[in-house]
Amino acid sequence: MRRDILHPGAGKLKYEIREIVGFAKSLARWNIPIHWENIGDPVQKGEPIADWIKDIVREKAGENLSYAYSETEGVRSTREFLSELANRRPVIELPGKTPPRPSIKSEDVLFFNGLGDAVAKVFGFLRREARVLGPSPAYSTLSSAEAAHSGYEHLTYRLDPQRDWMPDMNDVELKVKYNDSIAGILLINPDNPTGAVYPIEVLLEFVRIARNYGLFIICDETYANIVYGGAKTAALSQVIGDVPAIALRSISKEVPWPGARCGWAEIYNRNADPRFEAYVKSLLDSKRLEVCSTSLPQLCIPAILGDPRYGKHLETRAAMFEKRADEMEKFFAGVSGITLKKPCGAFYVSAVFDDVLNENPGGRSLPVSDESLRDYINEEIAGLKPDKQFAYWLLASSGICVVPLSGFASDLPGFRFTLLEYNDEKRKWIYKTLAESVQNYLR
Image 1 (cartoon, rainbow, N blue to C red):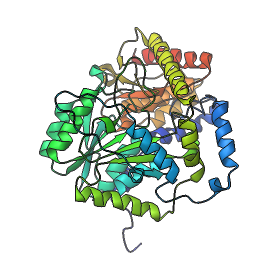
Image 2 (spheres, rainbow, N blue to C red):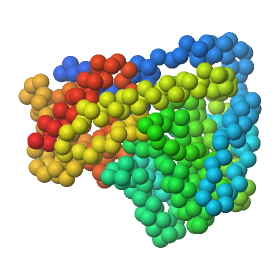
Image 3 (tube, rainbow, N blue to C red):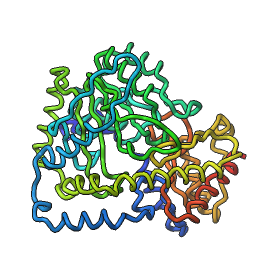
Image 4 (tube, helix red, strand yellow):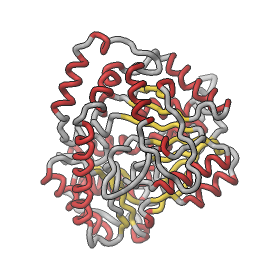
C-alpha cells in the first residue's frame, strides 16, 4: 500500500489468556483432552446459575423493552438504582479528617458492552502522550489497552509476591514523581491475576499520590464482591475524596453472567478538573456513535442485585472460593521452587518460579505420550520465555492450560490458574497434577 495504515500501538495488543488456546488446540492430533484453567468463566467451569436469577432473566426477556434500544448512557432506572447503591456504601472513618465522599448521581454511571468495551474507550480516548501507570503483573486487557493507546510498553509499578502481592507504593510514587507523562494510576482490587485484596491503607496511599501529583485514578472493581479469608477492603468511592476517578464494575463474575457483556463505569468528581470533565464527555460521545449497550442485562440488574436473596448469594460464593483456596494451598504445601500466596479475593492464583527456573534453561521437560509430541514441543518452545515453556510442557503432559505470568506484563516467571472448577474430584486432580508437575519440572 502507498501509505502505512498500521496504528503505532497495534503490536501491543497481546492477550495471552486467549492466545495460548491456539497452541492447546494444536494438541488435538495427540488426543489430549484440555482442562481450561486460563479463562475466568465460572459458567464454563460448571457453576450453575441460581434458579431465581434465571427466573428474573426469563421474565425480563418477556418484556418488549428488553428488545429495544436503551439510552446511550444506559437504562435510566438501572443507573438510578446503581447510583443509590453506591451512595449507600458505608462511610469509612479515616485517620484525621475524613474527606467528604462524592455524591454519585445517575449521570455518573455509564454502561458499556462488557468491561472490555469500557477499557478500550477509557484508554482509547486519552491523549496519546497521557500515560496511565498500572500494576505488574497486570490483567492483559488493561495493560494492552494502555500500551496500544500510547504506542509504547505499558508503564508499571511492582506487585510484590513476597508481601502478599501488595503494591510497592514507593515504586509508585517515584515513577509518578519523575515521569510527568503519567496522568493516571490504574489499580485492580481485588486483583487479577494475583487474587490480592488491598487494605484501606493502601487505597488511601493511591489516593494521596493522585491528589499530590494531580492525577486521576482508574480502579477495576470487577471482583469487589468476591472477598474472603478475613480480608478487609473498600470500594474506591469510599476513599476517593475529591480526586477524579473512574471505577469499573460488572455482573460478569459475581452473578455470574459473563456472556451478558454488561459492565459500567462509576465516575467520581467529574467536575474537579475541566480536563477530566472534557475527557468524561468524550467517553459519552463515543458511546453515542454506537447508540447504546445491550438492553436485557441492564434491565435485569435492579431485580437481581436488589433481590433479598442476593446478599446470601454473594456470601455463599465467597465462602465457596475461600474453601477452594484452602484446598489448593494444601496441595501445594511443601512444593519447593515456587512462591505461591493463597488468594483473598477474585478466583485466581498466581505462582512465581524461584531462580531455579533460570538454571538449565531449555533443558527442562515433563513426561509426554510419545516422541513425536516431544519433538513438537521442543520445536514450539524455541525462543519462548521460561514460564511459557513450562505452560507448553504442562499442556502436552497433562492437558492443563494455565497462563504464563509473563503474559501479564510481568518480568516474573510463573503461571496463573483458577479456583473455578466446579467438579470437586476434577478440581482436586488439577491442583494435585499442577503441584506434581511443578516439582517434576524443577528437578
